[in-house]
Length: 236
Image (cartoon, rainbow, N blue to C red; front, side, top):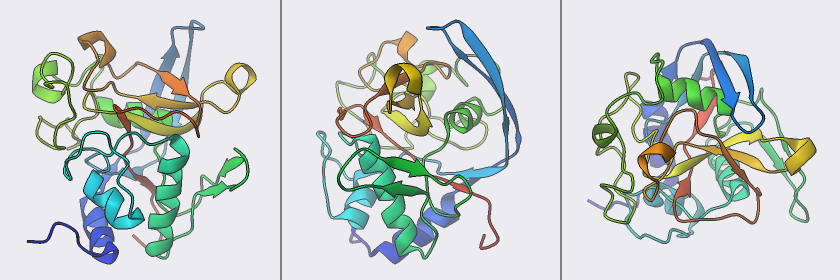
């Protein structure tokens, strides 16, 4: 079977796999500034897997990953690359794009009401990761995550560890995942948040509560990818 199928078929597969996440609330914390806050979560959709190299290539024609395996997560992409992918996929599906991206500078705006594909917000990501649990992980680490002790120094194919209670795979380990949110604009400017831990992190790096951030257009690394989210809308 040809693993590179047309983008319409890819979109149909994506839509059929998206997991419906119920509404609720999540309390986030930032150990750097010793702050915690509670966020209400509206029901939303999220992909069970990180975007793979195969899907990224089929939609964009690009293969940026350092580790080459079509079923492994795409990595070595910036936040802007991830947001641009979401826009392109939305356009191919006939949906309204979520991000307005300038070609000449880092001016990027996010439309939270658009029905297209997007990155999860940080609150959505942690809420989906925990899947109703209250600890720093939703299971025993070797059963749920690829990390420094078991990854053999590389990314691994998506969906090969145990999922959480809501059917989401690799929320911890394998690759960190970009979120939509700006981290702290007053201190870090346009820096965006990423979550989850990666294949080269120690056990303490793979926790649902860990927060990291970096520049949205210049930062790319071989343990950082993304997964798709969508709002509920009338076309679903």
